[in-house]
Length: 144
Image (tube, rainbow, N blue to C red; front, side):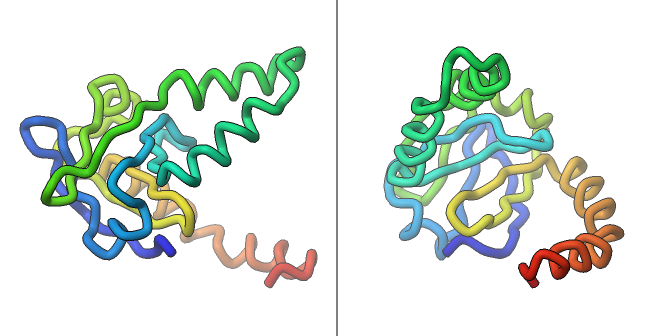
């Protein structure tokens, strides 16, 4: 399971280290794509295959599903973890997430999200303020 968050630096070759405890869950090859809220999503190959199959099964006649499928699939690339557990972040994805030097890697159960440090600060400050009210809404549905 992928949980917690870590701050890592992007090196000069645009590689970032995956926390060692996550490497066995992700495997040697991962897929990185544009994510939501200006983050990147990192999936194990097995998880990515599930996502890609689900996206491919959506109706291509619906404008929204067509657009979201393009968003996820056209920006995806596969990469190998190197011998010390780093992955490459392409210029396109680095620019999409506005990652400069430091990035925050966030474990989200079956995927990793990569955020610029500044964007993560903004997001988590805002999200922390609304956590109580969201928890109340979820409890109304019997989720918490």
